[in-house]
Image (cartoon, rainbow, N blue to C red; front, side, top):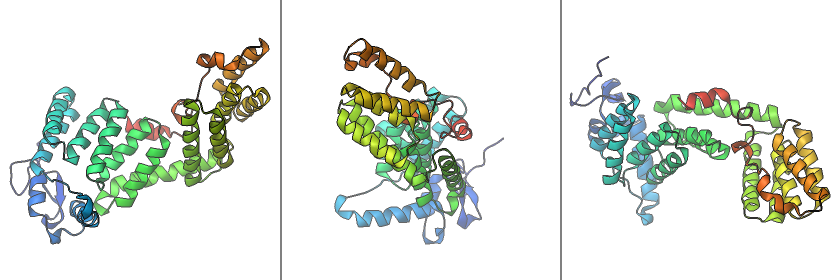
Amino acid sequence: MKQQKCIICLKTKGKRGCLIKDKALICSRCCAEMRNMDCEGCSYYKDTQKFSIEKARKSSEHFTVRIAPEIDDEIDRALMMVEAGKIEQGEKSIRLLLKENADLYSTHYAMGTIYGIKNQYDEAMKCFDRSIELFPYSVECWFNRALTAQNKMDIVEMITSFKKVIEIGGEDDDEVVFQASKFLGDFEILTRKETGLGLNEYIESLKQFDIAFDLMQSGQWRKAISGYQKAIAINSTTPQAFGNMALCYGYLNENENAIEAFDKAIELDPTYEPAAINKEIFMETIAKGLVFSEMHSKTKVIEYTKDYSVENNKLLIDDYLDDSSK
C-alpha cells in the first residue's frame, strides 16, 4: 500500500492526524512549524505546554529541550526500516543520529526501541530512562519502558511506568492509556486472587523484598532477614521471602530458624524447588557438622518474579507477555 504524504509539504510521510486539518495526516516537521493555540487538545501541543510549564517551574535548573522535526523524520524512516526487517540498517542510522544528537530525547527513545526489538532489555531501559530524563512527557516512551520492565520481569518498574502513562496521557493517547489501564486492572485482579492484596500493597511488598535481596547479596544477613520480615508482614503468601530468609538464617548458623523458614516456604508452595533443594543441601551440611556458608555456591538465591517459575508465574500475565514480545 502506498504511504500517504503530508498534506502540507507533500514531501514526507504523514504520520500525525492534525486536529486543525480535520485529522488529515501531516509530518512531524510541519506539525512543529504550524503548532499554535488552535492546536488545543492535540497530544503534541499538550506535551509542549506541559514542558513549558515544567521548564518555567525549573528555570533555575535550566531544564530545556530541543525539538528537531527533521531528525524525527529521519528516526521515523529508520524505524520503518526496522519494522520491514532491516534491523541492522535501521540501527546503523539510529546510532549515527544518536551520536550527532545526543541531546534529543527522541534519539534515545529510538535506540531503546532498537534494543527492545533485539531483546537487550537492560540497554533498552537505560535508553528510555535517558529519553525520559530529557523529556518526561513522552507517553510512548513510558509505555515502551513498561513493556521493557515487563520483559525484564521487573514488576515495580512495570507498574510505575504504566501508571505514568495514565497520569500524563491525553485524549490522543487513548489507545495506550486504555492498554495501560486495562493491564493494571487485570493485574490487580490477579494479585488479589493470588495474594489477597491490592496493587499498592503488593508493590510495596515487592519493594521491601528487593531491599532485603540487595542486603542479602552483600552478605548483610541480619538486615536482610529484617527486610524479608517486612515483606512478609505485607504479603505472607510469598515462598521466595521465606526461602531466602532461611538461607540468611543458615549463614548465621541459626539452624532451627532456617529449617522453620524452609518448611514455611515449602508449605506455601510444595512445588517450589529452590526451597526444597536448598533445604536438602542445608540438612546434609549440618548433618556432617559442616558450616553452611561453605556450601554457598550450591544454593539458589531467588529474586522474586525474576528467577522463580517464570513459565508458571500467574502474576506475569501470559497474554501481555506474548503481546510485548511481538
